[in-house]
Length: 150
Image (cartoon, rainbow, N blue to C red; front, side):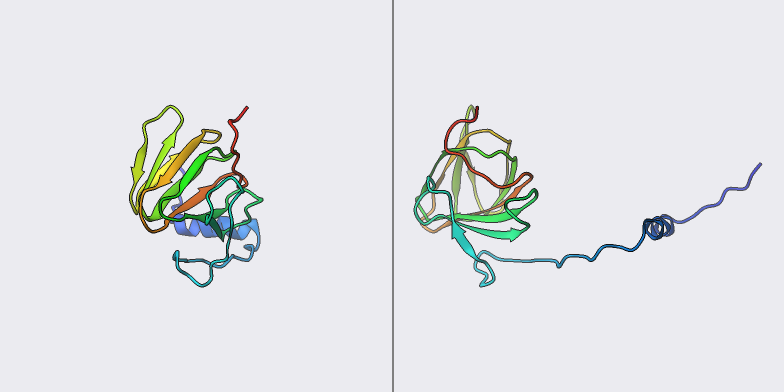
């Protein structure tokens, strides 16, 4: 019987990393709040409500896997629209009602997670007096279309 050799997992992973070659340079970690001076708020697409803003938190909106803050003023109505990408959301501030086609409206409070499937039209209303801000993570490049998908 051949004796077995036991290698701790951390050692095995380390050996695998060495075999793969030098590690690429790591990007910097990021932490932002909605009121951070480091945020660069830009405009939303023209069909979105006046006062709407987008701040890129991580990545390039023209490439996959970008994260943003999306903010609308209190009382704003977000018209029916859709995205090529699925979106994963967490409401950061305000209170928002979101309605996806064929589904009942859902009210989001700060800390509420929501998932929106790709190409599924939806609309929303900021129910609070102050702004509603969503953290949104996109899988595909960021877009928003006002018409129904084909």
